[in-house]
Length: 177
Image: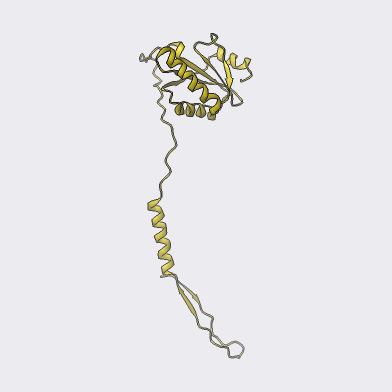
């Protein structure tokens, strides 16, 4: 039982007779009970934070994997992640189409993914495959932004692979490496 004693004393000091103050006694039991009731209520009704992770399936590191499906170059879009929050993309094989430099926002990358996905769907009848190649100059946020845009645009197939020296030279030519 919790209580707070605020007695005024009532002792005689210096021989003077003072009026005796009535002691006030506050019973805190009800407040303690209310505090525990509120803590219990919020513990039981609070939703725990859900993890904010994206499902990403990575292939095994087994070199003997023979379950690889060939994908036509005409339906592959390659994203080269460069420095300064910029990326470069090209459709098809490197050197056969002019690369384009743009940012990661919804007006840049998202618009490109939607437009090129529709073009590939119309031309080949199959979905577009996106090849993501992060460079040493890109950061983790750039890769997460690309994966978010792929998830938002509902791209069905994508892969993260190592960048080649020829593609690094392409990034250097455009000042992104």
